[in-house]
Image (cartoon, rainbow, N blue to C red):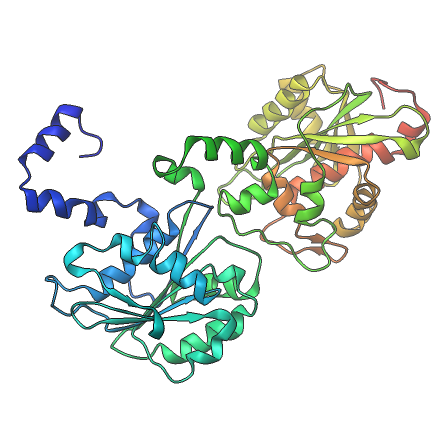
Length: 440
C-alpha cells in the first residue's frame, strides 16, 4: 500500500469506516520498518541494534504491546508481568513509558495502560502489569518475577553485567519468557556475549533507515559532522565497534585525526596486500592510498590516509584494475606490495592492466603486529591524518596489537596501510630522496 499510487492510497483511506481509520495508526505491523518486527523462531533475547533515531524505542514499546494485549481490550495476552529496565528510573519513565515513542503514545485509547507513578507501574485494562526498574538499582530486581522484559540502552548502563544477570533470574514465568534489548551499540562484553548466544537474535538499522520520521536538518547536521567517522559508525550506523585491549589504534585516537581537506603531496603511495584466492569467503585484497608531505627533516614529515579501495572476492584482474584505478585517481608515484604473497605475479598482473604503473615489491621479515608497530608510532606522534570514509580499514586497525590481529580473517587493509605508510614515511630510500621523486 505504501508503494501504491496516490489515488490508490486515497481510495483505500476513503473506504475505511471511522473505527477502522481510528485503529489504523495502531496497527504497527502495517507501519513498521523491517528491523522493528520480531524475528521468527524460538529465541529468548531479541537484540535491536541501531543508530540514534533508528526507531529502537518504538520497536521495544510495540513489542511490549504485542505481548500484553489480547485480541480485545479486556482479553489476556501472552505476558502478564513485564519488567521495564532502563539506565535510571527517570529514563524508564521519560523514554520507555511517556516518551514520544513510548508505550503510552503507542497504545490505542481502549487498551492504553495507566501509569501509577507512586508504584512505578503500568497497569493495562486486561490486568497485565509492567514494573519500572533502574539498572543503577538492580538489586530491586530480586524477588519479582516476569514473563517478558524490555531493556533499553543496555550499552549505557554503569554495571550492565550485574543488572542483566539479575533480570535473568527474574525472567522465569510462563512457558517461554523473552526479553528485548534496544540499544545503540558500544564495545562492552555483555552486549557482545548476548549477540553471540545461540538463544539470541539480532536486528540492525541505521539512523538513515528512519529518515521519514526524523527532521531533515537533524540528518543533514549529524551526517556532515559525524559521517565517515568511527563515532558515526557507532552512533548513526549502529555498528558494534570492536576495539580490543592493547590495540595500537583506538576509536578516540582515530576520530581525533579526521580531516576533510588535504594538502598538495610530495609523494603518493598505493599499498597492496593481495588475496591468495578469489573464492567466496576468501580474504580481501587490501588497497590503501597514502599521501605524504616530506619537506624538511624526516621528523617533520606528515601523511594522510586518502582512500581504502580494498576489494573482496576479486579475481587477479579485478583487484589489479582496482589498484590501477586508485593509482590514477590520486596521481600516485608508486605501488608497493608484499612479495611474500606472489610478488612477481602481482607485478605481472598489474602490468597487464596498467603497463606504466611504477611498482615495487617489498618483503615481510617480521610478523604483522611487529610490522605495524613503527607505523603506529607515527600516529602517536600526530604525524598521520585520516580522510572520512575509512570505516572498514579503521575497524581492522582497532583489532591490531603487538601480539597480532584479533579479528576474523586476515587484516588485509591494515597490511596495505602499513606498507603504504612505510614506503611513504619510513623507508630509508625515501629519506635519502627529494620530494616528489617518481622512483622511490
